[in-house]
Length: 575
Image (cartoon, rainbow, N blue to C red):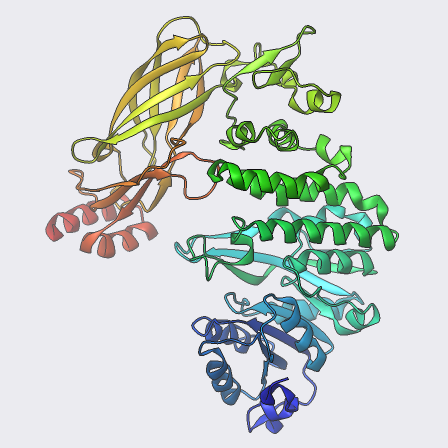
């Protein structure tokens, strides 16, 4: 180890360490690598904890930026802080966590990443739950924060909505979906009794560690309050993106599959083989589903290697896990397994939004299948069978239609011209031209743009629509966000609404500045593919200029007529 790491823990503390408590109640391990900018925020969130008798271990995975200097400065400011620097970079989260556990002194321990935070009362809440019952760990809610927008939400909120103590994971195997190690405070005696440490030399270490903790725990408590604040940075550069945001790397896929195999081995060896279906379902519904959402953006070479990595593992999963998935997800899985990769990319576009295929085929028994040919094997026929969706007889609002933008071009001012192709594979629409409407709702009011779709072949229609974004009904206080245009069709008195998929070929986002006669603030409006997801067309508004800075924060808090009138006058004065 390096000279610094070889020193005793006491030598790495502040010179005033003797003034601090000798026996901390909890240790918070903060792991860091080349994150000097965000480390102070993470550590500050621990120093602000309402339960102050804690130990803070900054475990530095041999950073090459200013992180060591920042960590030493923080340690000098607070006697509760210990700075541990590894002698070489491990390339992951496991080694810095495990080395910190070797020197942690408290009977309870939890983990924090340097780009995240703890809510102020996280330690107090978790320690209190430990004090109420003799449990092996306590877990709480995770608050997710978009680093770019500040929008907040909960991670897997349905799993932690109710306070309870779970006596063995067999009672609630759905908790496999909550695989974060950072949302939990562990009894140190529990970790040591089972020799439970993070697997080294592999990413997605949380999944194995947490699966082991669930299975080995006699009992654990769930609290509904937030105990971790997870910052999501979807637009981070490749160098700073989190592991979960590096799905474009095939080694990332390999690590995820490798960890799943390790979890499978552990379940079998520990006598929890009955949980395989639950774990398989979690992998298909969560892990594979994330990759499936990315498939429309991957090239043929990547898709081929991806299939080579995942298919051997997919073949080992329990049939019951597949059967629990929604039909569209089963279709994508089966197309990947059959190496129909272009079809898999096509099926993945619009996943989760009721988007139909371009074509369907019917066999001699009247069964309807995804695509243009009847599958060969019995398993493939079962997975690609759309008959349960009754594509030719279901109510029209649920018809399997597919709307794709084939061309997009800038028009005059803040307008765009879209060429749209609609697929009606089950021939639900009447023969002839169709009256269509494009819907867009940046606020409470809706923008409607009528146009016509003309038949160009059996079940295929094409049309053009001109969209003037300056005519969109923006709220007076402005709109900061994205919306996805919807195409509406009417048949026999009922409506079908379907998302509009962006062009398959890449196009540069179209951006224009829009001035509104209504008195709303000027906006930057961008037409682009959905930033992450399944390829929908997206329109994004962002208030700009002095008006946005002055007016929008006020009216967001008070959307009343009097305030709206004042905002209109102020907006006019600032133009």
